[in-house]
Length: 339
Image (cartoon, rainbow, N blue to C red; front, side, top):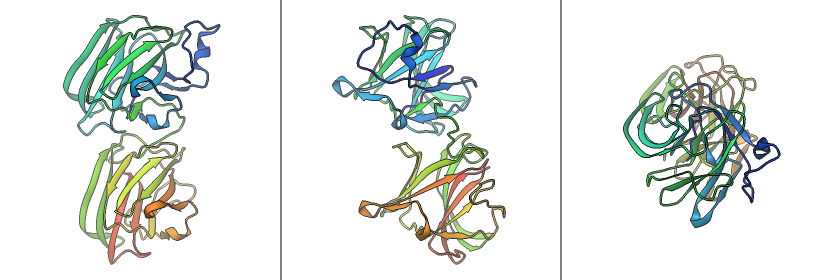
């Protein structure tokens, strides 16, 4: 998964069959691009984006994966490559820092991230003098190629040889930090920091027993009351569950519960236009039969996909239950966003 954390404008452009360095207008190279401008600094919980949703990725020689980028700014173009979308649970990741502001060097680091502002196990993989300075008035266009053995090269448009090379056998690039889709939000919880799945037996709207936490995962700053989070909930016959945003082939959250039943779903989401829940956590919320859902699909191997959307500032909950009134049996709750 690639997560590119840009501390300046990131311009993702279309791959072409040539890399000519001369253009009538240097910004012609950015036509059709997805753009992201990071304004919050190095220690902010910058968003990470799945490379599965990138428009311009191709397979290169020797089974490499190539991404073409453009950077616009004076210095400090930073990419973070991560295996997960919220890399704060002791996640090992790779960081590429191009044209550092005080030394004009390019540096590659590996570390374990425990929060947006905390890292451990720091290791410098490569440092090299910067060749080809960046500019705020002309995009710096280059191709990042990553090979199966962990080798990576960064090559400026029109150049024969890469300006930076390194190897990291642990590198993962399914996600990339850098916001490029206006209004996209993910799921968040625990003061906007975590998402979890729980199972319990509900004996009344306000009482539960046999509580157990299935999974908890970092997810910083995600729901929005203005932009709906559209995602597909996929449930497999063995109890595996995956949640993936629209247009993304990688799930942002997955878990397994072999006893899962989803004949009925209850929602607790304040501020939603289509179904607005106002009763609070312990209210006797209605449960809706999935049999009448419009956007449900049963695929091969008895896989069921439900497409859902959540628009809320916080506290988006989904409860899965085998019956319409789940007060004498087990109900599972998927916490979308909890504060």
